[in-house]
Image (cartoon, rainbow over all chains, first blue to last red; front, side, top):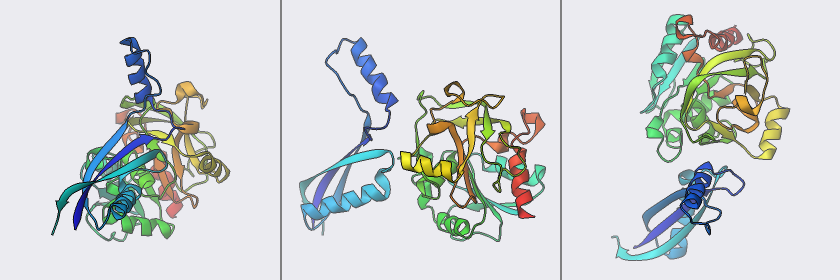
Length: 89
Length: 229
């Protein structure tokens, strides 16, 4: 079965205040990075999954997100799946 | 009354809860390890505060899958009382036994201090010994107590009188300046729709003896006892 590498990016929903992002953005401004805007701080998961296909792998990871990795009340996420080249027997 | 205090890896208020229930309230209480799959014959289940599973991923996110949680859910569905304090509240939210979620405190700081909370509903199994709008002096100790839910859920909480405690001044004034963590609608504690599951961020077990500076939390235990009779 082929192995895929999935990355999951998680941020707080846009409607939710992100004080960590705001504070970090302010720090950037203080350092002179005037072009920085709308900074959101989030989480990043990288995992390998065995799956028959890329589509199926993405489905599996989305299921993992909904069950455990994210809390849909406060967070939103984006999944990206790439072939890792390896296979598991 | 018989009570069980659930112990997760990282629980750290389990002994305080046990002590208050046993030594102060003189009830029968026992610890239940989270790996158990059934509860002993008890009336009340306490999910104590602490840092279950090191707060990894999200507070309460992993503890909710402990095998004992199925039995806790079952206990709650039968209408029996469950109280989740601090991390216990966070676990109840992640488990879906209470609506909403916790965000990091608005200040991004861990806050450990005495606050006042106002009783918003004194007709629950947890608050029947409190007067309407009675304020309690009770400590909080958390980094993620900033309660959040969507607008519709908040409306439902209001309509069904599920908001049991709000952060307030000593005199019961509710305002942003008395809200320690940025909690939506100043919420400090809510129940489920049926009213038998309470989650609260403040620690009644740390305010049940005068030696500790406040006995106000005792009224919550007394209410639970009274509701059993």
